[in-house]
Amino acid sequence: MAKAPGEWTPARATKEINACARSEGLTLSWKYHAKEQMLARDISMGDVLHVLRRGFVYGPPRNATRAGYHKYIVETTTPNSEGRAVGVVVISDGACELKIITVMWRDEL
Image 1 (tube, rainbow, N blue to C red):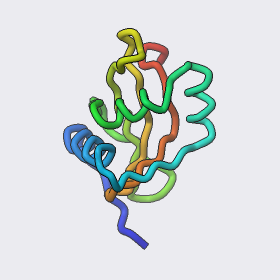
Image 2 (tube, rainbow, N blue to C red):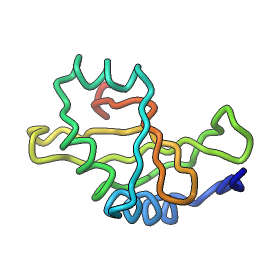
Image 3 (cartoon, rainbow, N blue to C red):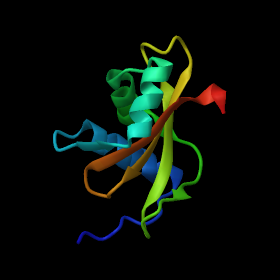
Image 4 (tube, one colour):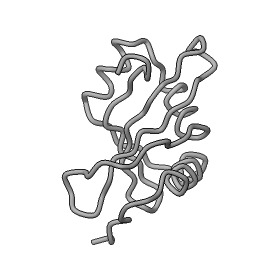
């Protein structure tokens, strides 16, 4: 069993998630809720990938259900978002697997 990545600062989370999302070894997994939210908000897979590759983590993480894992909100505008910031809640395994928890418009919080 792989060791949990632990808690990252927002700067480190940004760096790690961006690098993983740009990697050819990227593995994505999805909560069904995330797919529902994308459909309801007309946010595409390309938008989600853009956020993961180029977005920023501004706030502290929240604990995930598994010990040692944390949820981060990565956000930025995308070419298709008409100036609105898209947020992606993601859990990283510390290697190159990202689990998408949900997708949202940041101004709807």
